[in-house]
Amino acid sequence: MRVGTQMLLKRLERFQPDVVHLHNLHGSGINLEMLFLYLKANPQIKVIWTLHDCWAFTGHCPYFDMAECGQWKVGCSKCDQYNIYPASRHDNARWMYYRKKELFLGVNNMTIVVPSRWLAGLVKESFLKEYPVKVINNGIDQEIFKPSSSNIRKKYGLEDKFIILGVSFAWSERKGLNEIIQLSETLPEDMKIVLVGVSNVEERLPKSKIICINHTDSRKEMAELYSAADVFINPTLEDNYPTVNLEAISCGTPVITYNTGGSGESVYPECGFIMKRGDKEAFREAIFKVCQTPFDSGNIVKCSRAFAKERMAEAYLSLYEK
Image 1 (spheres, rainbow, N blue to C red):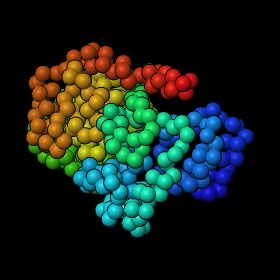
Image 2 (cartoon, rainbow, N blue to C red):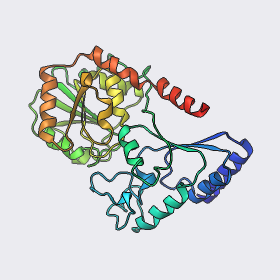
Image 3 (cartoon, rainbow, N blue to C red):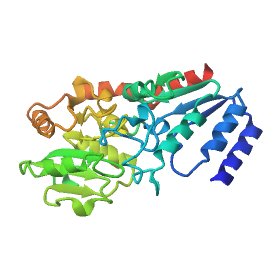
Image 4 (tube, rainbow, N blue to C red):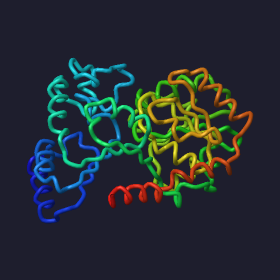
């Protein structure tokens, strides 16, 4: 980690950038102390840091909703999630909290960017509140994610079924896996759940109730799955501004999600329902509402124009220029 960071800093020395744009820094990819001491020693460099979760201002965890923990507001200690990603062998949350605070504060001309209003609000309550915070929503490639015809229904034997789609890179309790398993047990035969990205949990899933797809071969195939679905569900219990919602909406498919983090910020009334976090019965009822009174896919696609990657790029270019 130190060697890789030294190589990075030498490259920065040669390149002499006007702006350094940071993204996720947790894991073992970079030495935080070396990086931030370099940035502080070079105040002519403007810094933009896009936060994709809460890790930057906690002692350990990227999210704390399920743990119902508010220690990050005053100083973390006795972390119950220290062995969860980014996993640590020991609970060093208190030390890490104050070390992060020492390192991350005092950077000349740094702007924090977040994808959601929800995360912006948390940053303003954290020790990073001294920095300006700007919301730039995630964007997606709408040349790929658009209404697409396919043989998906025939391929999976779903010609006469109401398709309920869920997608995740890695399913877990945090992503709402338990909610979906419980939901599958209550649905009639003419409704079928299709889950994508299940390789890590496939043995837990009731195959008679859920069609499992480990992965897709391309983003085009993913767009075809979104388009074939009657509704996209995202019962996530911890999240920021999930792009799967944007992809489904861009394909003309209504979205049902919990009001978790910023997950509901992309779901306008014309393109889905936002339910109270953890209200499983209301979530189930929303699915039946979509079945009985389908949304207008044309109106859904119109809503998706706000998610174009070009808009995100323009917002970042404007920030760079400033």
